[in-house]
Image (tube, rainbow, N blue to C red; front, side, top):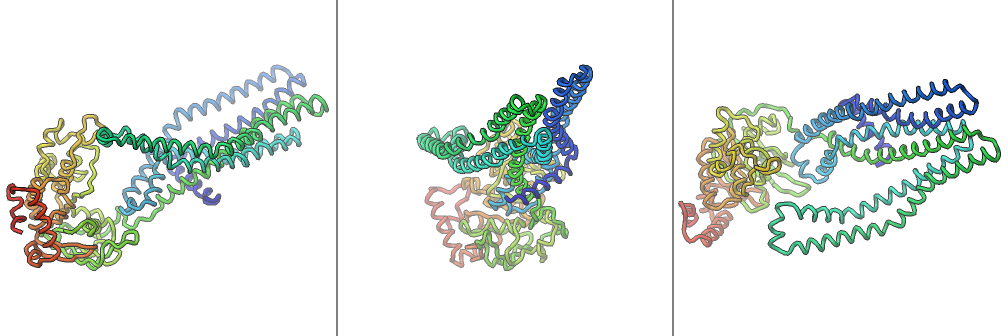
Amino acid sequence: MNKKNAFKNNIYALKLVWKMSKPLIITNGIASFLDYFEWLFFSAFFLRILINGLETGQEFSKLLTFILICIVTLGFISLFHSVRTRKWLPVFKTKVNKELFKILFKKASNVELECFENSDFYDKYTLAMEKSDERLTRTIEVIWGVFFGAIASVCAFIFMYQVDKYSVLFIIFPIIGNFGFNRLQSKIDYNRNKDMAPHNRKISYINRVMYLTQYAKEMRLSDVFSLMREEYRGAIRGVTDVTRKYTKKAMVLHWFYVMFTFTFIFEGLLIYGAYRTLVSYTMTLAQLSVITSLMVSTTWILIGFTDSVTELFKNGLFVDYLKTFLEYKEKIPEDYDGADPGDTIESIEFKNVSFAYKDKEVIKNLNMKFEGGKTYALAGHNGAGKTTIIKLLLRFYDPTEGEVLLNGRDIKEYNLQKYRALFATAFQDHQMFSMSVKDNVLMGHKTEGDTTEKVLNALKLAGVYDKVMSLPYKENTILTKEFDDEGAILSGGEFQKVVVARAFVQNSPVKLFDEPSSALDPIAEYTLFDNILKSCKDNTLVFISHRLSSVQNADKIFLLRHGTVKEEGSHKELMELDGLYADMYRKQAENYLAGSHETSDGIFKEVAKA
């Protein structure tokens, strides 16, 4: 990142925090000013006045008064720092945390789904989110550090010149040390950390695997530990090799940094001052004391200023991620306001729809129509585009070409939240939240009447009611142990049934089920689909299932291949067509029959007939 962009980004951070907490910026500025003021005052004025007073025989009472004034001043400065650190900063930082994450969460919830599936955007998003409040607050401190550090460095230079014009030449040493050797050392540290990164990632992964629950069984049922151990040893050797590679250069540069920043200036100035004071008698003891004290202060001021400048550029990169994320213009903003779609579904139509993801065409010239109140099934092999169609229907994405119509009108014209409220969904790639079973079913949706009764009924339809009732707190039991040691861990199939219950409990005209039975056995699958068909008879129903025995009761089946409709019709029509669908159905039927010697509850009756 160049200096101009780093400067702009830090100004952006300053303006952002100014909107959140003006007192934070003001108190940080005062604190930074007082820090540098203390360094300069006590090294440039306090010692000079005190020693001059002693040398000239000034009255003790005047010196004592001066010292007391300095002590009181120092006491007030110390009091300010104490109040600021222990009382004000926690309040100001909490406010920044609250306001910043309000902005970040609002933005995160408003960007389209594609952003979370785009690795470049997601990396910047996570970097922007990671400790962003702390880093933003630190950015303000660094900005003030650079500002007052530059002023203090100039003042120190002027004060030293006033005492002895030749003494300012010694400032060259810490400047070379900080801006020369320290910068080269920082580059070596950067390259070393970059070379170590892959080894450290492997070490971190192995450390994590060794204590995570989900790996425990495999670790005990196999000898994978020996493989992990070898990988770990290899990573440690890699870290050691990288360390050796840079050690000599780092040692030499660090030696030059210490010598130029501290040794040459301190020892050199002492020798110079001692000669002027004791040999040539051209410098007073007061001047020697002041100039040595000033040199110490100047050195630390320059170190602080250099570190602040370096950190300013580092923070500039973080702020760039934050700025990029916050200024991102959403393609499909979640708060998009448009026409009210109402709650009547006459038709949903995909008209010449094509969709490409990262230049790879997933849907190609798709034409498909759902009529209100009927049941539809999307069938096809993995990668046929079934789930992508659902995402286009829910407007997680917009088509690259063509349009999706609701009641004859492009869905882009509707209020997005009201449009999505028309759909009750259960996805295959579901997520369970560390909340109660009831909340995991309702997912924040408001329902009329007794919500508990509706949740329990949804759990019954999904086939997980008995399991939930066996939990310690029934529907109020927390799922996962993230925040509650008494939380319940359900099986994959049970989790999936809870997700399906989400679609049952919502009073929406369209019900979408994406592979709702992928983790279920055939008997549980049959029961689930029977409940879906019965409970959703008044809805427009769309479901995806890789098991074709589950789709045969749909009014219409769309067989998809390579993102387009290859065949469509009822189960009977497609079997009579004797095409791709019929071939897939028969092959699946053979597998079912090969794995089962007898049918159960009529599950395989239709399969056997085929």
